[in-house]
Amino acid sequence: MIERKSKLLSIHDAIAQIPDGATVAVGGSLVRRAPMALVREIVRQGKKDLTLYSWSAGMDFDMLIGAGCVKEAWSSYVGLFQLGIAGNFRRAVEQNRIRFVDISETCGMDKFRAAAYGNDFCISKTPLHSDLLRNPEFVEIASPFTGEKYVAMPAFRADYAIVHASRADRYGNVQFDAIRMMDNEFDPLIAKSAKKAIISVEEIVPEEEIIRTPTMTLLPKIFVESVVHAPFGCHPNSCDTRYDFDLEHGERYAQCAKTEEGFARYLDEYVRGTADEAEYLEKVGGPEALRKNLGR
Amino acid sequence: MKGYTLEELLTVEISKIIRNGEMNFTGIGTGGKAYIRACGIPLAAVSLAQQKHAPDAVCMMGPVLDPVLDKESIPAHNWEFDLIYWPCRAQIPLEDALGQFRLGRVGLAFASGAQVDKWGNLNITCIGDPQAPKVRLPGCLAQTDLAAYAKRVCIVVPHTKRVLVDHVDFVTAVGHENREGLPGGGPFRVMTNLAVMDFNPETRQMRVLSMHEGVTKEMIRENTGFDIEIPENAAVTPAPSPEDLRLIREVIDPEKRFLNAGITSEPATIDDEL
Image (cartoon, rainbow over all chains, first blue to last red):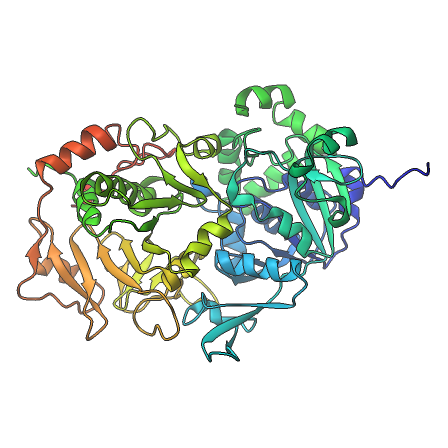
């Protein structure tokens, strides 16, 4: 039998596909299940002029903005949840260094869903009379059937999506744990909305395991361009019931992000100063300690 | 010396506007005082209403629907495992949870923010000119959504001139200035450390409904950034009954995980503002 195509790549090679100036859709929400291993690799490779899409962002956007990778970003939120303000995001917007487009949570989901269903725009009543309409990408229209007012918004059709999931086989069949945070149910649609999806997973499992549990495969390989193995790939974000948010590291991050100099030191120590994710994980205590401290 | 805290007073006042059979929206919240206003007080109020007049009222904390809201079930923390394993009747995809808004199935939605104006417009997005903001805040979250679709919105904020302004710098969530085409009912109550307010149906602007014990009209005018209507017959916000206080203190939240944000990594109180 002819060997089938493996989609399993190193994190380096998967991220190397993304060119400067690309549009990138980012999975996860707030500080839960953001694909931080992929985000750190984007920083290591020094990507420039990216446009980021999210329905609810956190440390992922803040880090990419602070590292100078971003020219434009769309989200309903960029913050650190209980740890407060995302310092790099705040500075960049206040100093007008990036274009930030405000959307609400459902606007972000509508825009991803439109792209995932092959449409180039979507409609919503949410933005009516709000200051979301300040941006030219929000256009008031009337229903051709009832005349009711709606706002039309272009779909989030990104060049790449980066999403973190539970496990996959080497062919790119991606699964999500049965008990999981339902805030992130949109991640498979985010992956489908983009032209190419790069998925990081906690575990690579044999195809037999996938065949044994097919209803967990919310993202079959047809939607997946590349899959990478990234244990603790959300750290310091939480990952469903596998590990919780790393409060101590998160506080360090929040503190460093308060100033440009502080954040440069953070990146030098944890991101640019680590050759890859294996080195990063050692730097933050190693997988054993993380499992012990952050696991259930 | 009052025999109750501001958190308890607002819990009781909010519980009175919770209607039986309705879904109430709180979100998950962050920490400290913001948590107390946006989540802690509303969640305790839903629980109180369930035990008094609204046994079939429920609430959603993001994708966590109809959680059990008593001292045995409120977790010590608010992190990922605590939310996932919080005893509740359903956890559904967040888009379906927010979809309840669009279908008109959410009764009362709770909101808080950096600025509220006389129309009930709410701003949690930025302070200053949005093109060149003085302070950039984290973003709109789902507040634009809930203000568009919920039947009623209850806003809990501190009562200062910086918060209660003539016009917000950014309309994150739409009030009564212009709601043409929006299905929801808009702001219904604004609750602060000084007063309970509603909206005059004729002017569509905020007015005082009741002033908390010890608060004067002058105090309200001095701390409001617009010319607020204070009717001659504005009542005094009634003190919580002994039974309300017993339920809050003994059955719902003895460890003040809700009312003093003990569930978050930043315990706090807003009682010093009463």
